[in-house]
Length: 105
Image (cartoon, rainbow, N blue to C red; front, side, top):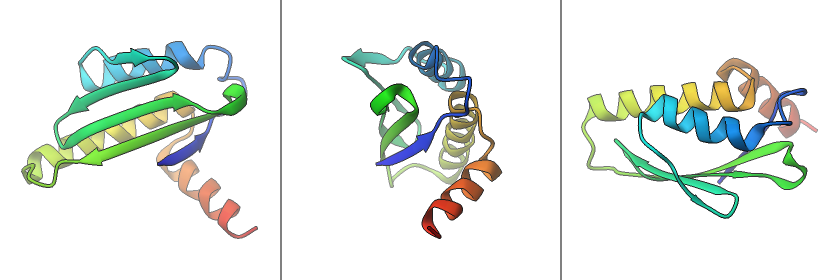
């Protein structure tokens, strides 16, 4: 499970944004269970997105389908990164930089 910080100012409508971006990026309707949204798509047997404590983080738990073809894996990864960019407000580069700064503390 990974936990991603949400960009300041984007926490207000986080739950709605997570739902909307899962639908936009993956093209399927996510299942909702409590505060968790769940999908299955391409090389992902499972993707669960949950709003973290205080609504300032997004927790994402994934399970990969190792039998997926390379094309499916590449497409799924591209969609997943696009989802994280939109949901957190941080680009991939910014998320990596933030994760490295937290590790160094």
